[in-house]
Image (cartoon, rainbow over all chains, first blue to last red; front, top):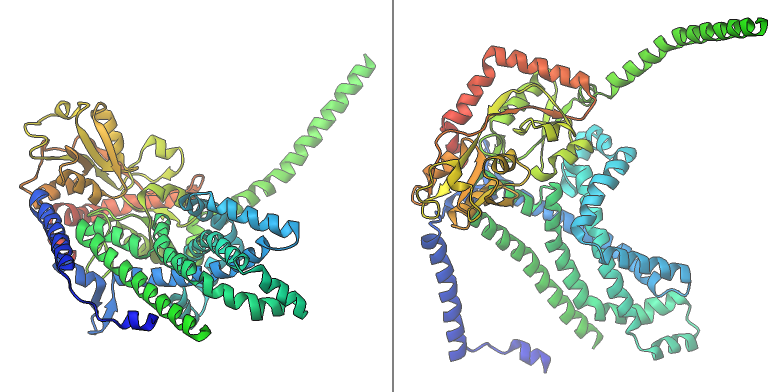
Length: 297
Length: 281
């Protein structure tokens, strides 16, 4: 039945046509206002060069904006992974039998969730990373590493000169997102019917078996939609780290704006690039949900 | 009497021995401190690392990205030459203007070479080299909103809105010359210009020559109400406090390249010609 609905061909009704007409008219009006009302001089021809450029040898190279997009992707992937790990641990802490663990989990969630992310970023960048990174010797390590290690680091994380800033940014975003993931996981586990837990108990399953075979498979299916929302949020929230000058998409766009004064073109390009990233993730998660529903049905 | 003299003799002895100890110890101590100061100076760190880390912020035509994603501009030339003369590589750390001093203080880079004007309030937090350049504030206004405005007094009214870049010396200039005007601040200069072009602010105050360039680019909306710059502000390298070795090197480097005429030649290229413009757009 559900499959039938999904496969049904969309038909254009009169209402659809009217809505499309209205939307086009509004967009056209905004464009007209910007061009005529604000005397804005559009110069789209300058933008493609800042996405990709051809170097002296005739090879295609990523330029400012694409480099920024790649940094955003790297930052988001690492932050998501780290946030999932921290969030899962803290989520189990939140439902633990031990009071200490519950207090720890609760403190973490409330502390992070009730602080503006911008404040967290500044605290981390200027205080924590300023004190911890030199002790760990991240900067020296990155600089003195061999050529191949450096290029691998650049591919996985960031160029050596931005490495310590990149790490503090990733950790901050991860901690911030982890607070929300903690709550999603806690709510997910607690939403499983009490009978399931009782059944596990009656079958004499250990805690690990109970979680692995009964509780978590059901939990994951339930928490996938809010979790996906959180992952998409991570990509969007990563724009915040532009304030500490991480060369991610938003920062690079603003630098470009400062250099070229192409305000609207830059913002629109950045918006499109973010949309490409988040929409494709949305679609992928939707597919995954359908797949999981089928495999459990 | 005897006790008194005995006491004074003892006191004298104590003073002499103390003096001797100080004499013996202090040269060693002073030497240690001096060595430590030298080793900890940014200059020594730069030589050890082989890389000069320069904090800067995009500011046309001081520093900006060209079409190939390379940084170009007056400051970039200065920093590259400085690193070249030191015999080290240069690394630029683009940083938001509002956070550039905290970033220097927390050691994200060695020096700010970013068109930073020497101001007493800033000087309380960082040390400045001698000036290697001078800049001035200029004003560009909206043709309709600020129609007929010719003097600073015309802008010094509560119903006038002035846009400027957050944390820049333009802000101080506006507060000094147009204290009654309403001030709106932006992270980047381009946003401040956009505000005037959009007709939301009467005028924008920024470092010369960009206001004039913008007026040329948008002749139907923008105009220059006051031709000459209304401040003269020295620009210096900013370093962390207490680092006199580095400061001394920078000061003398500036004196040398200024005497060569190199600074003047570079300044002419970036500020008085527009040969570089084709590399941007």
